[in-house]
Image (cartoon, rainbow, N blue to C red; front, side):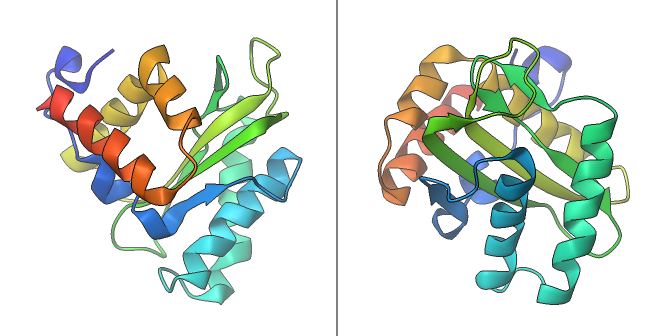
Length: 166
């Protein structure tokens, strides 16, 4: 599915998932540990105050309780909305050994697209959701991302994907 399929223009994923928020070979092996590690990266690079980490982890897990955000085929899209940020934050984790995310197909997750969104509903949020879903449902692009070993490679893949949505 493409963002354009639902009548929305896309959002550049290279902007949402910058190199400094790309993680490889996660330390965490559980869903919770991975989300904590990814949110910890937000504070490590100065995108959020460290004091917001535990709240964001709680909000993401509150969302997870309503149903697993693992689509299947090795992809998860954990997310939450909050009023403690003013603009969307994204982190991308690539882990070739895989993490149990309670995926509907029972497979381990190798790509985790974490998105923290401001509370207000706006068109940008819908475009972000559409773009991330379009990428996550496309085996070709997911395979290309799984082959990346450096953040610069991820940026190139995301840039190529962004061009397909333009």
